[in-house]
Amino acid sequence: MPKQSGQTVDEGVMDALMGTETRSTEQVRKDLRYSTRDAMLFSVMVGCGESYFVAFALAVGMGETLAGLLGSVPLLAGALLQLAGPYAVRAMGSHKRWVVLAAGLQALSFIPMIIAALIGHMPSWLIFVMVSLYWAFNLGGGPAWNTWIGTVVPRQVRAKYFSGRTRRAQAVLMLSLIGAGLMLYFGRKHLIDEDGSGSYLLVFAVLFTIAGVARLASTWCHTRVSEPEPLPAGQRHVPIRTFLRGPQAVSGGRLILYMLGVTACVQVSGPFFTPYMLKGLGFDYLVYAGLLCCSFVGRVVAMPVIGRFAKKHGPAKLLWIGGLGIIPMSAVWVISPSPWFLIFVQFTSGVMWACYEMATMLLLLESIPSRERTSVLTTQTALNAGMMVVGASTGALIFRLMGEGTNAYYTLFLTSAVLRVGTLILLVRVHMPEIKRITPIIFRTMGIRPQFGGIDRPVVSSIDDMDSAAK
Image 1 (cartoon, rainbow, N blue to C red):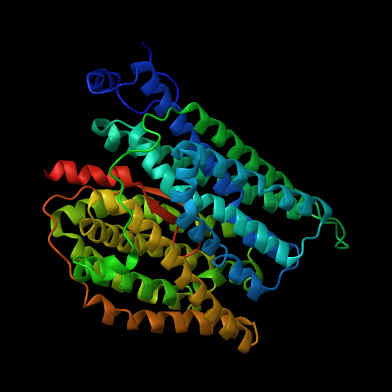
Image 2: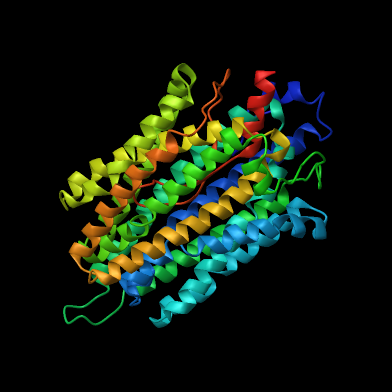
């Protein structure tokens, strides 16, 4: 049988699995095909839509302080809906149904922004509401998707399948991000007359339409994937208080506290890099897209090398490299506004954040039994979002008090770097056990940010294979 479009697992491997599969060979192949297409369409949505929310808000007149908050505060809505996700799954009797509903509603969140781009105006409060809904349904379906995909992809092919799926999604994301930047660049150049009349907001309407349609198509792909186990057994809910005070507190609890401290300190400056580039430095959209791409490329290029380093030297050394490496990454932005210099900064920052995230996830997941991982990661995401709001609100207050000019941006970048030094107090207290066998973690990119490269979430089923490999 010829290989079909979107298939990322060898025919021979698939055939060998069917002795342990209740689904037909063709059904498994179909499920994997449509899951890969979902990942690629999701990347189109991120590249053409989410990556330009703050840019759109600035274009319709939102102030720089509020625009900075827009990049972080709405994620709290998604984190809170994650906590309600298990109740929705039980009420609907299916993980798939909840994922399909959340994805469809997320696609609809683009409609008000498309209309606003066409009429040329959108109140700031409404932008916050719609972006919050976007993130609510984006993150809200995440834990259910993680559980569902674990039943869809046969264990024996997960590593190879998810690696191929991720590579395709990353390529589409970079193409979408740069393509959208080009459209905005030429739109701003040709749709505004010399006297200042005209509007390039039409380009945002086109981009958000592409993003919304891509998510609707992604939702349709979800419907084409089977659900072998609507409610898999063995999943256990763990209150975060139990995790922080129970047997895992020495390793996992202290690590989570360190991670939360890093998030709060980083978010003092993190949400304000986009306003700084587009308003403070006056970069055009093509330069902005290129700089976003550089941090993302840094992560993508570094991940295989980081995985090999972790296998050879352990995640503890990797965490110290990442934990120290991210400290100066905000401060170096005050050295020079040159795009060429910032390309280097962004790429390096992406590498350092990749080290940090790979190491923290390896150590955290080592301390959590496989059946408790979805529960603990969901709660950790909610706590992390809360610290994002704390950090971003602190940054917004400092930015406003400093007069919202170039010096205010510099103050944020330097303050964030100084605060990050303080997180080393928490880092030295983290218990870092030796992990006998390390399998690099597969991440899903949920959004793109300057400095970090991306908002990533681990694919839990790829992590569970670490357990089976170690046995």
